[in-house]
View (cartoon, rainbow, N blue to C red):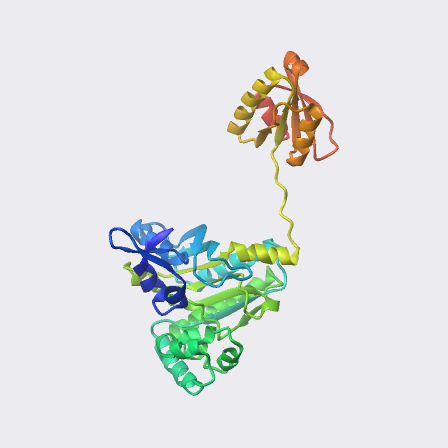
Length: 384
């Protein structure tokens, strides 16, 4: 949850909004500067170096999830403590891996029945060809310096790519006519970019609804990105509400002290995803209850219920014991309220016979008698 501050200053970029405005940074008792992590990729790459993951078969495919922190204005789907999920594929610079990562993101969004989304892609080149593009971008914006916002005037020299990412209407209009990064790609970056587009087109056989656009204003907000960048967003938001975004970061591991290693990944804010799911009302998460609730009548049955529950849990069965001291009717109401698949009823009669009553709660099946042993009850619950 904490990282050395210089990890983000070096990796994310000290000219980015995250480093300049949004990080929670403090000095600990030993005088070291620490930061609550604002994003996940830099920390994953730090761990890749520290734990020698370059010795594993490449690429190393990983995922992460957890709390992240940014000091920004809370708004729909955005919080100062956010929950982020992300994936990284480190160690392979092939465009095939780019499209594998994009496909994974697209299929995840589809699995939530989020509809009306579009994929935006771009290539922002690398350290070889980007300097010429940045020079052209600065020259263009100097001719519009009086038309852009104050933030963009400050970004012009130190972070010109950020100009294209401005969300203010007057700045977006100017950015639309700015030079395109894809016109400045070196031969290697251009070949990589062409392959990405060809591979994306090949996905349409599997995903007929895959709609993508090449957006030359898409640069992402972090300095470590190279070549392919992408975002998935609802069409109606016009770039104001990204659901998932990522890209290639081939220079990041070297920047933070490792050997040159290519990488690509994406991240998504779970809070924003949940907000989008709720707004579309197209996905109803299943109500997953326990496999069985043990209904018990009498002190001996209560003790037997507790022992059976422990054994069933150890066997991988999800089980609850109904609250003690309630009538059978009240315990059955509790079982239904928990969305349980079955109720196992144990009373004096069942203890005497050695068989409990297993009653289905979610279908019209018949009640059956089962021996009060963990093995037999578990087999019955699994349909054996």
